[in-house]
Amino acid sequence: MATCSDNKTLTADTPATVVPSGEAIVIPAGSVVTVTHRLGGNFTVTWEFGMARISGMHAANLGEEMPDALKKLTDDKKDDGTPPSETDLWEALKTVFDPEIPVNIVDLGLVYSLDLEPMSPTEGNQTPSGYKVWMKMTLTAPGCGMGPAIAADAKERLLAVRQIKDAQVDIVWDPPWNQEMISEVGKMELGLL
Image (cartoon, rainbow, N blue to C red; front, side, top):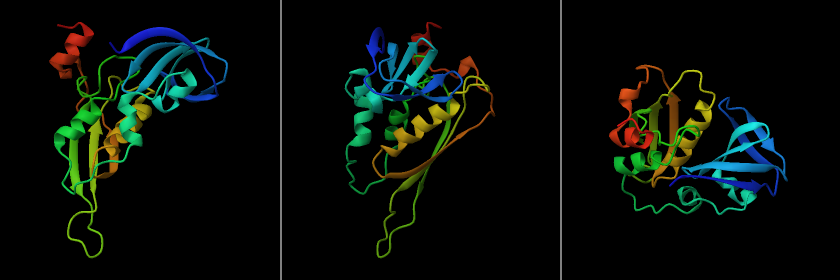
């Protein structure tokens, strides 16, 4: 299960994002936080000043190992010259979560489109130098301050896919999101079925 509550004392000043406002902060070393969710490689924590999201890149500050979902980002991508598959892109996005909802953005129905475009070949080569992904997504509510953080996570995960050299993630509001867009898997996770 992705959720688990336990107390941790931060070993270093740790960058975080306030939930739900999206404000960037630093939680001081020595602060006691309670990990409420471990989703998509990030940690949702509560502490004396509220709720925040800590990137899995700072897992060591919590006394934890970097989550598997993020290890791929630090490993070299195997590059066999073939275009990335659409399945690889969608699977990468299934590791992105809203810190307040324990369902990934794909199963929440927040990803509206993914378009793959070959980048210009390098000089003397006829094959593309890589691929760019154009993604359109939405949020469950227009006032969600976590939107930029969620979009940044999505971009980071797309860039971890083999042959992806650039990604643009745009937040759009048309069509407006509604609960009917949640997949069956997502509805089961949320207890809506």
